[in-house]
Length: 456
Image (cartoon, helix red, strand yellow):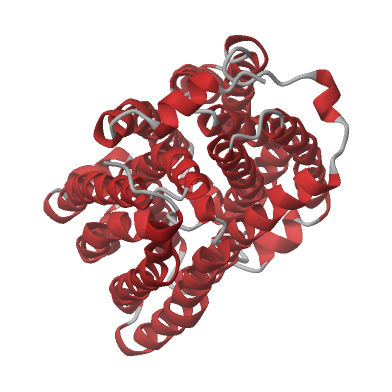
């Protein structure tokens, strides 16, 4: 495999220039994904309040799907970029092919869950038959079409691991444009209701997947050729992908489970509270997902720097990522703090929703100011084969802090206590992940200075 082009991109270009070139397309791509989430909520809100509540309760299922595919994707990305940094000529191509094979397992899991567990899952959170009815339709349709979302993520990881950020951007733009066209068509024109919303989302992801696969097998062949012979299962490569990927998958799966628990806490305050929580999750993705775009731009450089033991380049990349994430999340935090009513109007909030949502959005805005930096600090570890640090941080945040604090504060202050629990959790978790980064600096990166000369 000729990996010269990828090595030049990841190992020799100035860090700031490289980060802008790699992260900017990914940020735009994730912004398009957040737009997709927000637009979906806006159109679903036009169906009924029960439909908006249904997609809120479906959110943990979507997160679980994302956890599986992102976990495999992080493993693929890390394996490719580290192999390039180590100078391995063949392993990156085989890692890509074996990662695509692992995607089939993810698809099977989602289909089985959708067909057998949806009714049981929804009844954990609500007894409202209208919400349950809409939720069953949405989740089952989503699960049957989940191969689009899964393989979109896997193709992104392959392309980004080899330093190609442009094609993932095109995928996201195509996917967002598709849902912008299909949502009103299926929901308003064809009057397909919640089924139309699910079909629009699934179809948009399949279209994006098609672009991603074209990118992997055609447009990116010179940079990272994925050959047919690479699809032979390779135990060592699969292990390498899973060693990094499983902690990342468990991290997001934990987030999915905890999101379900918080849904249950919030559901005790009625359908309107559920809808407010769902609206916040989807609109706040305008600040959260672009930050993950920053980390996607960082990760190939971090993985290469780890493989090459280049301390200076690793630190510069992390610092630039922190600054970018802080700006993005702070801007969105200000929107929630200053114009919560306008944001609620986007989802056709009822008077009851506005009564809950105005307070909720202003309190939760405080978390946005720190959440972006925390995400970057947590995502530093997977490219350096320390995914378990990210997993430890996430479990501490979600299980050790978020659930107990939301329960405790809800006993004291009702639904306002749930939002307060979020804020206290995020600030506490920030100091935890900051401490992990300091440990990583001292115990791992400080040793690189004697192993390899730092970049000038």
